[in-house]
Structure formats: structure tokens, C-alpha cells
Image (cartoon, rainbow, N blue to C red; front, side, top):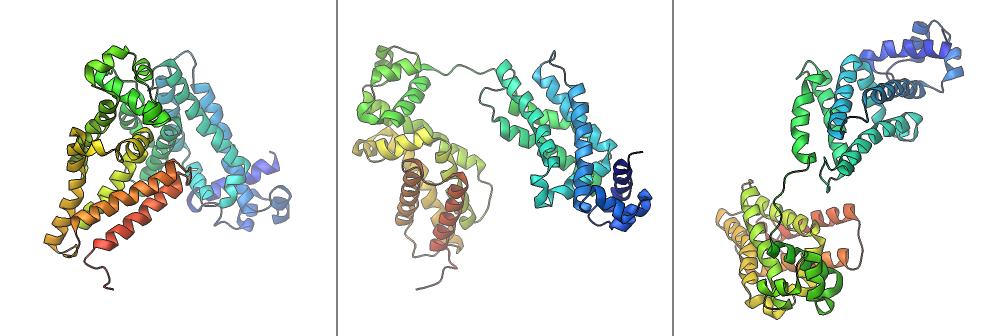
Length: 388
């Protein structure tokens, strides 16, 4: 037998319970029946032995996956097969799972050949998901990278449940529950075609964001919505009426959605939740954000429109939270709900303008800024705030 393989086999046998890093080289050499010097001819140390063991498993795993997948079946079936293969492999090779987890604690792993093989494994998932989108089986708006991470993270978590916590006896028993959760996230749904009003509003929001109100033309909005210019005027009196109709449906939805999603108790916690909710809602709708901040919020006619009544209901949530906190004693009595409401909305508007229009701040920095802004605003109202 090749001595390098012999050393790896011995190390893997010893590592089943303790891992490789906790082993001593003389233990491995004794098990492999070679000298310590002989080990150092092939490996720089225990870390390289660990990475080599994991690489060997990944090569087997990838080979098995390639044999399992079949281009003659659809993407959903291949996705089921690759998840099943991973779960079964983890059941058959618990030592490999422990070694992979051990590798991930080491920064050097992420620059190793073993990690490159791990990336190839992840790419198989991404390839299948992308194929499903192309075939029209999976949703066209599927975030392939996110779904890949959800799947790989689920497989890892099942391994922890099985091998470390002991909640389940077999990883493979989680196959159907995983697929049950993935299906609604991935599969294309039968969707009711949006009505003309909704299509016109969506198109208008996009074109107002791209060109601004002054340069936007009804004919271009109609073309984008797939309707005639005359049809637009059947639903909206003018370009300005169309502009001011955009936030109406949005804020009605925001109010209902927040009311359904809020589950925390305590006014300060509710306030933190609202700020995060407000920020995420706007940041995930960049075209609406641009249109609202520049074209609607600064338009005097907005404040006498139906849409403003909807917006009023939205920002009243902030005032109600402040009042609730004052009644329960968690928010200072001297805080003016109206002034604080304006501070919160104004602060977010300025931060958002910097992000969206000045192109400053990546997604991570944005989330950090939201967190810091949230802390500052909650400190401003909290009953525990220091007195000047």
C-alpha cells in the first residue's frame, strides 16, 4: 500500500472520535507503523493531513454525485438526488462530517485545495438550480446563491442534529422534510396575471425612478405596462395622479403586514422592530424608494391626496408605539411622539439618499448603519436614557 495512503487511513481511523487536530504525530505514526520522520516527508503537519483527508472525501463525494445526477431528468429530480446523496454520505461517513466541521474552524482551510473541492460541490447545487430556472420549473426570480446556501446549511444542520445533538438517528430521514420546505421556495407557481391598474403602477414606479417625474412620459409607461396610452387615462386622470397613486397601495400593504408580523411585547422592542421593518421594506424596493423620496415626499400635492391618508396610518404606528411606551413607563414622558416620528422618518430619508443616489455604502455597511441608527433612536426615547 502507498505509504501516504497508509498514513491517511491511520489518521482517519484515529480521528473518528477526537478529530485530527487533537492527535499527536507520534500517535498517527504508531498507527500507520511508520516513523514520525516518514510522516513529515508527505505532510507538513496535522493540518495538512486533515485537509488531505477531507479532499479525499470530497473527491469521492463529487464522483458519486456525478454518477447520481442525470441530465435526462428535470432539475427538481436532480436536486432531490444530490440532497439525498449528501445526507446518505454523511450517514455512511460520520468521521468525514466531523473533519469538515474541524476544517471550517481553520482560516487556512479557505485557501486550501480541499476548500476548492468544497466549492465544486457547492457549484453542483448552483448549476442544478440555474438549470431549473432556465427550464421554467423553478421561479424566474429565484436567488440561486441564497437557495444554494439554504440547502447546504440545512444539510450541515441535519448533520449536527444527528451526530452531535442526537435528535435523529439518520440524516437521510430529513430528506422529505427538507424537500417539503424547499418546494414552495423554489417551484414556479401558477400566478394570476396582474390587472391593468397594477401593471400600470408597477411600470410607472420603474420609469419615474429611472427618469424622474418631469422626463417620464405616459406613452412609455403604457408601453412598459403592455397597455395603450388611452388605457392609462381610463384609470388615472393625469401623470401626477398616477405618481400620487403609487404609494397608496404600498402603505396600505405596509400597515397590514406590520400589524400581522409584530409579535414582540414592550414598546422599545416594538420600536426597534419597526425601524428594521421600515428600513428593510424600502431597501428591498429601490425603485419605490427613489420615487417616494424624490418625486412624492417633496410634492405638496401628496399631502392632500388619498395616498397621504394611507401614509398617515403608516407613520401613526410610530406615534402609537411611543404613547404605549410612555404608558408602560419604558419611554420618557417628555418625548413628543410627533417630533420623534419626524426624526425617525427624516433620518432614514437622509441615510437612504446617501446610499441610493450617492452610491455610498455596500449592503453590509447599510445593515450596520441601520443597526447604529436603531440604537441611537431607541436611546433617545428610552426611560433609561441619561439626563443631560
